[in-house]
Image (cartoon, rainbow, N blue to C red; front, side, top):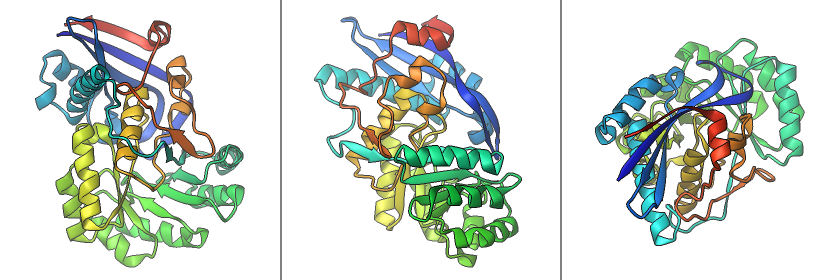
Length: 337
């Protein structure tokens, strides 16, 4: 089996501020495997050090040394994704089991000046989005979220995401001020499950665990701690398709809502997550409408959201077809193994 590793850097249309820092370009590692008949499978490794503490270099090293199965979860996800893409394409089917044809998605809004973020939200409303997520844990949080609610009106769902940067006291103070804005949920207001449980006891706003959830065991621990009402599952940090599916099913067992999202993943990761959401009948809006934030042809290989819905790639495999030109546009380095 021939293996090729490609280091990609995909520029964003505009810098994307969050509580963890500002992202101007998204670095990924793409694993391509090819059998003796020329059939190919692609797997994406999508660490984001400011979010998950995993460097792109460590993931690339694990994949280069063929230690992906025992390396960081993002490397495990890439190895599994490439294998599933190849095997499913050979069988003429999608990676995920048949399910929904479209998945509801939220529009993710960065931190930034309230009036600028509100303008983006108004554009999203005109495009048909029915759920919006605002990054918080930054200056002007209350003004920013209020501006977005004013721009979208009272009906669309509105979420906030602090990426775990608040203390319990900070979370309670800010969220108490935001309660009149009718939030659907707050995503990871504090770092630990114990802190989430304390916030949840103080407020009526539903709490979703994100960074604290990487495995099915984490989901069970969150339920036992009374830490959340919902969990946000990511393929990259879970370690792949099968691990993320186990986390989703653990949430169902515990009576917790669940949804999928990405950390500015590339099209292979987004396609895999859409297929998983479809096969597991995920009904909450997922955070998978992030390709439109990129300024590259690669970001347009999947159909954009329409009226707040994303079409599920039908396959074969992941159903992602990227031209050599689109790949060359964002290619930093390529290494045959």
